Image (cartoon, rainbow, N blue to C red; front, side, top):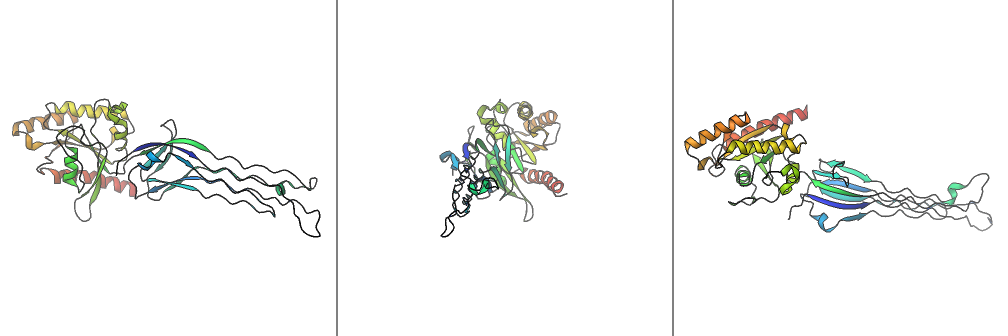
Length: 336
């Protein structure tokens, strides 16, 4: 199934049903009073987080959603039928934004979570509603109230506890495949990964976490270059970021600094998240180059640098333990 993480759709809740003008007509009661019923409510627009979905691809083909109108009233004081809500199912992690793409209307982060985004219009009043001591036979009813309408953006942000961050060809897909049961596309050229991938990393029977691999960043990603803002958005929910640096690159310190600059410019708290710095492709480095590049990266980041090889498996167990330690602390804080 093709992955789609952003879509724009049109919504309109249902109009209310009309009230009616009617009078009681029975044998031997020639002047029966007004008995026109009220209209029913229009249908609401409701969004529901569905754990069985993992992409917004359905909204590429269906972009207009209209809830049903409420039923009209009837004689004998019969109220019109309330229209059922129109339930729109989206993946867990979907954010609903206003047309300006900035205002957050709803954030669906729990399976089964529901939110009423647009309310249906109220039904109109039948003439029985207007009966009074001075107006015993009103010939007036009101139409139903109109529903609400809006264009909204749906943006999917993956629910992952750890996120892989790095430039194209840094080895993120290889690392995800080595740590988990995921099978991302892997090749020796940039931009192999064109959409986010998720994998479950299991340390043992009791410990596991979800790891996300987003497409490689390029300079200017925070401004949307290479769709960078959409990819960075998938990291906003992560408890820890894993900065993966290609050890075969000449200036690994510059690569790390560029990554940090993109996070700072993007905002949304990404630069403040806990991070692990990882030097990949150790199998391609001589002992001297490995030592020199690790020291350069530690000076640039001010952190301990994990040296790994996604191809040979070197250092992967220790890296997984370090990632899980940060996630476990986050889980304890949330449970407190």
